[in-house]
Length: 289
Image 1 (cartoon, rainbow, N blue to C red):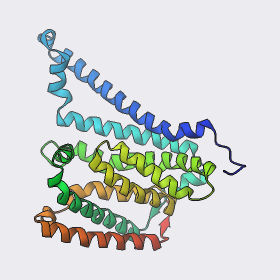
Image 2: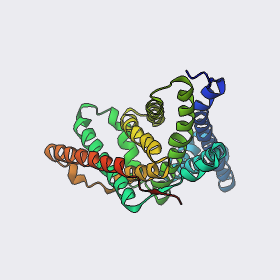
Image 3: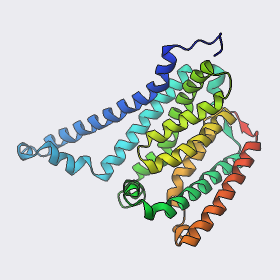
Image 4: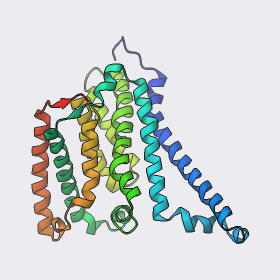
């Protein structure tokens, strides 16, 4: 440990405080939503409200796809506001400018291509192992169906494809990566960026709450953490994150029509993903806003 850098209790607390705020936000949105539903039922159904229970009201409105979409969007808007302001307040003036620097169009295209090819590679692996873990994939399939199926809406698409990438990057590669890096900087003299990237990627994986998303969130979290260090900006990571999320609608099903097609798609896209990463690694093309 560096004698000039003493580790304090607050350094440990602030590593986990943003995640505690995430839990508070989720509960606050749920409670507010229940109150709105209950009050609206009181106002619109006065004659039958006495025989209606909380359970029936919740089953009628709370679990509806459109209501879930509004809740998801509200949660991520709060992420953007709270964690964006928080990151702005704790960053120096020079850091405030750097975290919103954007890449050139060519670099942005590489980031989008890396996101799509990386997701196709992940999906090919998931397709191959799916028959062996049917129960594990049940919740994952429900999640993807909500986004792509009849229950989807422009509200949910806005939440998943725009608000979520921005909010999660502000949280994990912005606030958490900053606090985690500060912690390891006071504990180790070497390997600080590596430890920081791996730790935030692990927290990012746990945040997703299921093993399938968690595994590839950890892998993609490592790359997203590296992007934040590489460019000293959150914009490249946001672009990459958006490309991953939007790929759920853009990847043709024919890539996974047969086992052979799945293997070929996975191998080719993994090779392309590595190529795009190497090109991103070599570029220094990032600009101030």
